[in-house]
Amino acid sequence: MNLTLKVWRQKDASSSGRFVEYEARNIIEEMSFLEMLDVVNEELVAKGEDPIAFDHDCREGICGTCGIVIDGSPHGPWDATTTCQLHMRAFKSGDVITIEPWRAKAFPVIRDLIVDRSAFDRIIQAGGFISVSTGGAPDGNAIPVSKDDADMAMDAAQCIGCGACVAACKNASAMLFVSAKVSHLGLLPQGEVEQDRRVLNMVRAMDAEGFGNCTNIGSCEAVCPKEISVDFIGRMNRDYRRALLRNE
Amino acid sequence: MSKLKTLYQSSLGKKYIMALTGLGLFAFVIIHMLGNLQIFLGPDPINSYAEFLKSKPALLWTARIGLLAIAALHITSAIQLIMINRRARPVDYSTDKIVAASFAARTIIVSGLIILMFVIYHLLHFTFGAVDPKFLRYEDYLGRHDVYRMMVEGFSNPFASAFYIVSMGLLCLHLTHGVSSTFQSLGLKSRAYVAAIDRLASISAGVIFLGNCAIPVAVLAGLVK
Image (cartoon, rainbow over all chains, first blue to last red; front, side):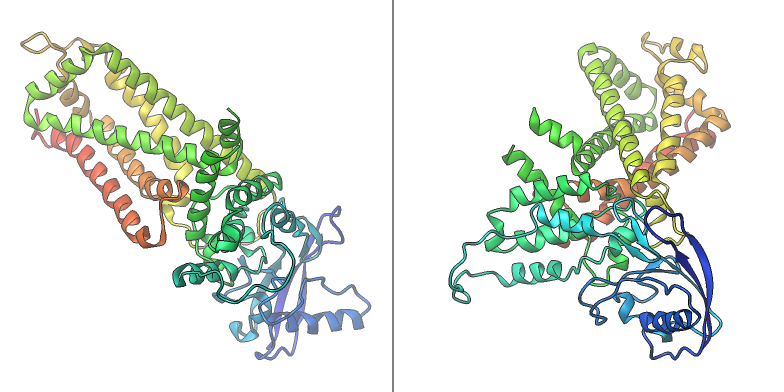
């Protein structure tokens, strides 16, 4: 199939970018979206032009590195799918596809489709961890965890930190990401002891990075490649309220 | 104090303020509607209810100042949140695609602004008598303020009634998103209750719309005169 791409090109963080049109020719539908971009890039390199810069790593939907807004949807038209797992059979020959980076003040564009997501790392550094003493590995099942809690913690732990929630939210809010991390650790007995400090510090870090607020519209949940539920945002609202009443 | 400061400065804290003040205003709307529906019982009950409220100035003014403060907090937090949210997304996408957001959620600012204008008009109309000064001078046979006559005459104006009905529609819209968001923002919307809370929001918004609109409709239809 042959496609027309309108791609956001931006030299670096301080330059202003613009859309540039490219033709993607002889694309087969078994290719992933990123492989399609690889084909376009090979042609650009052969012509002596700069290839389109985009983030990618595992290309199997689990690392959270890739992420492009495709026709206005973070990670493109398929539900529960990262950009690397989106395949070209989602499109048909002749389609015009608009390709943009995540848009958020807290995610500045570094080059073309690549944004700086280190804001997420700083939020994790503020409390997205469990403090444990080093030593021998503890016995399996020494600390009982109920099935319900384990399931819910696993649902939250699915978050790969790609930032699609921020990209989709009209307020560029990071609350789905932060709530997933807060819940995933706080639901388990190993993480529960630090939950108050964790939620207070992570929310403070989130606010400091310049993310927006949740207005409960659910765009984040709809685009999340790991189907993280907005229920976790409600959970974080509750954990934060409790932590605030008990501490400071 | 530092707790209050953290609450006020944090994103989640502002959402709590939004939710709690919204809840206060929601409670007022329900009580106000129940009071007004007494018009269907004839002039006596509603006039004596009004007389009762006026006879307790301490209670009345505490409620009025409290409501004003709650409304001011609701609006201030809304403005702060909107400004933070605009700053967080300085560059828009080339394609304006709506993902998941309901109509009520997308229009919450517009519906809120029009409701605010309506509340100001409504106060000028019935509380301050600025639209028609003789409204406040009506007296019934016991010398009480004739609220019944004021309401009937006020709603006999089709333009006033139309603005009222449109505003109630927007209030209904505002509440369908607002009531369910209140539970979510306060962390009371756990997975098991999502459907029940959304239903509660729709039903309460619908009841408020129908209950309030019944009055101007009945007046215009000549059922209450």
